[in-house]
Image 1 (cartoon, rainbow, N blue to C red):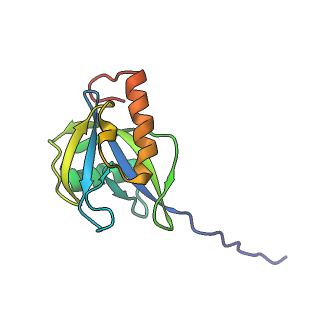
Image 2: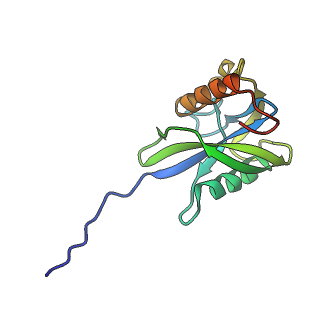
Length: 147
């Protein structure tokens, strides 16, 4: 009997973003690059590297980009396409230590409440997650640092 190896299309690569929550507020980051995205707001994060779990990638990315230590809590329902071959997953995260600073890829950070979150010009892939987060925050006010 012959064995055949079935080649499946490679899965999309996950980009993880952190919905950092603290005291009923959500952290937003303003991008500096690429030029098409510069000046728009997003939930900070980055690519999951091969062999890395999504939660550990989130911890690493937020340490590199913002200089903070976070605890990933839960995944926001949904996945949103980015550039071809990439998909965005958003996780809520509790700020454990550090004061967020725009160290990489961002020039400004802002804590927003559910009421003022959409005063920012969010990147399109982030909008559904921000909408879900703000509705969740309104319907079930969080304790300090939790969704």
